[in-house]
Image (tube, helix red, strand yellow):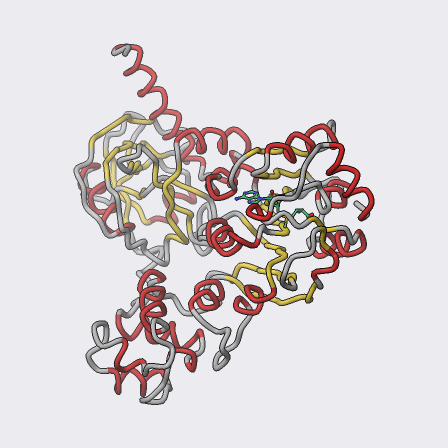
Length: 453
Ligand code: SAM
C-alpha cells in the first residue's frame, strides 16, 4: 500500500494507529516486495504472518500463490483484512500471537514465518515461535535495529548476550539490511532492520543439554563486567580447568566466549555423552506365528528382509494436561527416518516378554520409568510391518533424556492437534504409530460410550 492509500484506508475503517500495539505500517511497496522475495515463496508454501496490519506484506505474499495464516491482535484490522482479501488463500486469526500454540503449526508441514513485528513484544514473539522442535524452516523478520543487532552479534561486542546465544544455538542469523523509520506510517522512534533465521542442522553444533546451556549463559551474563570464574562458582568448582579445556582465558568475561565455547563449557559441566548405540544389527527378535505364538528367533535384518511376523511394543505417554508425547525419529534410523512416532517403541527380543520390553524401551529411549497399562493389542498386518503390537499408556511430565542415536526430539502435543495433523499429513508419521493412535482413540470412544458423563 502506498502512503496515501494507508491514510485513506485508516480513515475509512476509522483506525488511528495505536502505539501500544506497535502499529507502524509499511508504505514502501518496493521494500515489501523485496522482503517477500527473500522468502522465495511459491504456491506450495505455507506462511505464518505475525501482525499483518493493513496487509503491506500479505499482499505481495498472496500474489505468489502461497497460503497464509495471519495473526492480528487488532480486531478492526483483522476484519479489514478478511474483507479486503476475501476469496484469497488467507486465514486471519484475531488474537495475540503469544497465545497461539505453535505446536498447531505442524499440521501445515514446513512453515515460513514472516512478520514486521510489533516492537514492544518482538523478542517474546521470536522466542515463542522459534522454540524447538518447530516446523518453521525460515523466519524473515523486521525488528527494531537494536534487537536485530543483538541477534546477529559476535563475541566481544556490547550487543552480544543472552538473546544472541539462545537464538544462535538453534538458528543461523543473517542481518540482511537496515530499514529507515521513514518507510513507516507513523514513523517509529528508532530504525529497523530485517533479519533471516535458518534452523541449524541437527549435527551442526556439538550435542549439549540446551537447558543447562541457557542457565549457564544467563548466569554468565548476569553481571557483564564480572569474571566468569566468580559468576559460575555454583555450577563449576574448577573454573581454571574448564577455562583451559574450552580455550578461554582464566579471567574471561561472558562476552569473550564464542557460541562453541559456551557449548563446550556446558559439556564440561555435564557431558552430553556419546550417542547411545543406534540400530544393533546383532539383535535377535522373537519370531511368531499368525496367532502370536513364538516359533523361533532371528536377527533384525532377516526379520525385516523376509517379512517375518514378530512382536513390538508402543508406548503413549501423557502429561497431566492429557497431551501426548511424540518422538521425532532420528534421520539416521534405518526405518521411517525423520518421521513422528509414539513416545517410545521397540521390538520384543528373543526370550523377552511384552511387558518387560515396554519397560526397557521406555527407559532406553526416554530415560524414564513409570507405571504402564496395556491398552490394546494390534494384529500383525502389512500396516504394522508384520508386527503384533501391544500398546501401553503411562503418565510422565518429563524431563526426558532421549536416546540421541534414535530420537531427534520429543514434544507433547494436544490430542486435537495430533488428530488434525494426522488427517492432513499422515505421511509425517510412522505407519505403526497411526495404527496405535486409531486403536487408542477407538478404545477411548468405547470407554466414553460405556460411561457417558
Ligand atoms: N505488517 C504490517 C506492516 O508491515 O505494515 C503491520 C506491522 S506493525 C509494526 C505490527 C502489527 O502487529 C500491527 O498490525 C499490530 O496491531 C499487530 N500486533 C501487535 N501486537 C500483536 C500481538 N501480540 N499479536 C499479533 N499481532 C500484534
